[in-house]
Amino acid sequence: MASFILRRAEPKDVSDILRLIKELAKFEEMEEKVILTEKELLEDGFGDHPFYHCLVAEVPKEQKLFILLKFNSRCSLPGYTVIGFAMYYFTYDPWIGKLLYLEDFFIMQEFRGLGIGSDILKRLSETAVKTRCSSMHFIVAENNTKSIEFYKRRGAADLSSEEGWRLFEIEKADLLKMTSK
Amino acid sequence: MDFSIRAANVEDCKDIARMIMELAEYEKMADHVKVTQRDLEQDGFSKNPFFHGIIAEVPEQHKTKEGHTKIGYALYFYSYSSFKGRAIYMEDLYVMPEFRGKGIGKALMSKVAQLGLAAGCNQLSFTVLDRNKSSLEFYLSQGCFDITANMGYHCMRCEGEALEHLAQP
Image 1 (cartoon, rainbow over the protein chains, first blue to last red):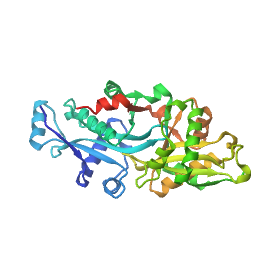
Image 2: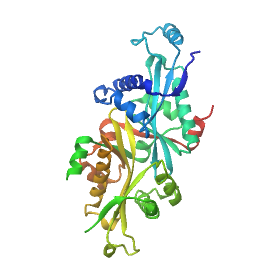
Image 3: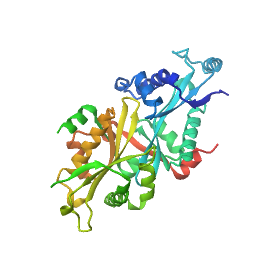
Image 4: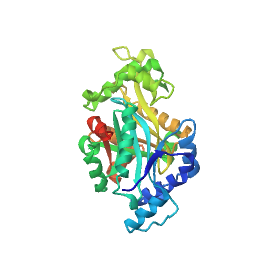
């Protein structure tokens, strides 16, 4: 059975975190939308008031080789041992209080099906329960049926379908227009 | 009508709690509200707040028949986009019915946008119920982009027993 560790991200992990963010974006066909830099990840995640928290999944170098051989897969990035991550932060719902918001959650393809994703989700849920969060929230693309099933199997509810909530965004250029009126 | 927008302080929690309930009733979800005035005081005004608030106030001569001068609010917090970095999330935006149509909602939202830009945010996000047609129209007229309709992103939640179960070894 594959061995892996889950640990809190450290400043040295920012380059792996950005690599995995881009891999997830590529999977969602939105790679060109990632404008975040390593410098910003460092400032925003490891300063006095972090905007986010991160868990990383790491496999030992030898184990990585064993997994790749066993599953007969090729890894285009042979030097890396950080093979998955979850980025989250705390939010607030004025009806029910503190929430844990899961912003990104990704395991490299070669390392799926080994229980790493389930373990990350378990660790996040423990964090949520320990910090007295009522709920864990996240978004999923509706065409990502595999992920939706993964979450629904674990008791997640689809608030968009069930309660009619729609997510809106305003980009920086429009924010500037709004504030200059 | 004359009105002012300012940062909320701990003394505003009573009015914020009142207006949270009014907004929940408007969304026909009043039975979902569990947060109390005391929770708001602890969670919004301690050393590491989980949210921030801004209040819209009118002068005494325009107060409601119950005597309220605090007639609108917005709750927000800082979030993070793995694509764009720092972001601001507007959790609630509410103006009491008799004070709508006077630019107060726009002013509250503009203030949240200003605060976000000042903190280096690249994006403002929020959610709207699809049956809330007048709010949907207002936001679309402000240049907002419906991520759910246009990109198929669904908001998901794992709570209560499901969350506890997920946390089990």
